[in-house]
Picture 1 (tube, rainbow, N blue to C red):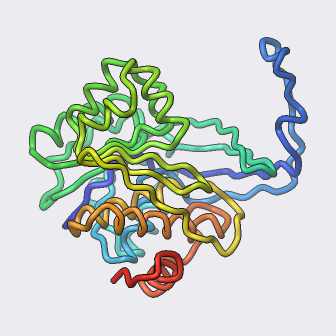
Picture 2 (cartoon, one colour; picture 1 turned 135 degrees about the horizontal axis):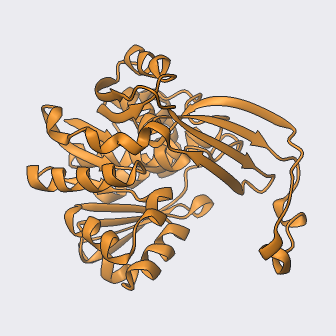
Length: 311
């Protein structure tokens, strides 16, 4: 099943702060916050939600098609995706713009502070779901505001089921707008903090939001995840990572597992287990797209975690 991955392509500049943010931020002085962090390590990586999801989905047998906008500096990124066998039918070049740029500082507790310049993402609404053929499933990950809105409408009009993954884009929308996304989507995926924010912004408790979709998926970091579907709740354990080095892109890796399991018609325990394994493989490497993903590696970690065969 060709899966349309709507979201960002971006370059991530990742910096590691060899200390704890909490030691350098005075909560009672937040209104006059002025803080500088001495960075011990810096690197530039491939990133963006659409790129990260496709990177994890393709090697396990999925068929991702990236729909994203790039700037004048993004040609190399398009070539990279194509070299990985990822379809770039939906990648559009916006002349005169930068490709999205994320600047991420991570501390020793894996807390993150991120600054993001959307650049070409602001033109994502110029791409249309109907421009790409043969799509049976989709995901709307963080992107330009108008792009997220129009792609949701186009998925709904085409009758294509999709995951709504608001992520960092949640702050772009008010409560009624978020509810409109949810009512068009078949699935919603958030982390624990985003879930609380989603409930607060919409004024609807998570349990009630779960009743509006086929499944509401909430990731809980080291505590695994929970999937609310069909009136049932499925706790998904976290797979054991070989190391815990960098959380950047872990949520995107998890979502690739969701997309694969949904496309295959798997039950939620198996789908969530695959998603958990992909997140564990990612967190053991630095950068969102530097870890190795193969069906053999995924299958072995799934077996050691859940005691059964995945494939």
